[in-house]
Length: 323
Ligand code: SF4
Image (cartoon, rainbow, N blue to C red; front, side, top):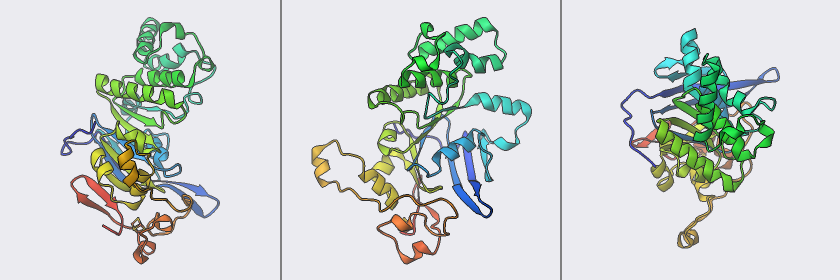
């Protein structure tokens, strides 16, 4: 579904040299996100992809103000989200929503579906009869019905719980939704249903998505652009078709080679590039390429300096000394 977006327009979201560090002990720092920059344009789906621990969820949480950045800025519609007035904060809370990985943990077990989905509407001071009507509509939008309103989260399957989470996110008419691994906790048979629904909702409601995933094959059919993260940094960004047909960073190449090839002819010629070892600790990383210890193309310079991000073709950015 790659579309051409007018990248000369002001982006809806601009992330500028964002870092989020967590103190560990007296002197060390866990650099979960380290100098990350990217933009998201209205109507786009941008995917943030990488292994667990690469900083993608922490980045998402900084974008919705669950975490305060250690340094750097996040702008929404041109405004720094850490410097909003009281009224702007309230508007931001409605405009930007998050769908969580574990739909069960993110739903209050003591609240009924009506209370969960209607909570944001009540905070926005909608009268109770209108809340009820809107909750009913929202449940229909996500493939549930009004009989579900008085039930509790434990009475639902994983896929249904994620639908409740999506209805809750939609309740306040958001513009931008951060989908944090929304299908990874679900059965494979349910995953496509939720992805198709997110796709449909985007078209119907004109939503913008940041889709966080560890699996590149999931984002292929959903994203306009893909940002690949490794150990707190962005290593490659490109439009989806470009990234899949012309990956440049050794880490992206290895991730793509791990996707099973459906076409038996192409499968014969495709070669899996193994990634050595485990993702290292993000505590006090050395000032060099963070992928150096696992990269089969590692050179002397890779262990001595951090590679700069270069635009190798329009809209295709790579941080690697090979470029
Ligand atoms: Fe590999 Fe060097 Fe590129 Fe890092 S900078 S990905 S170690 S070639």
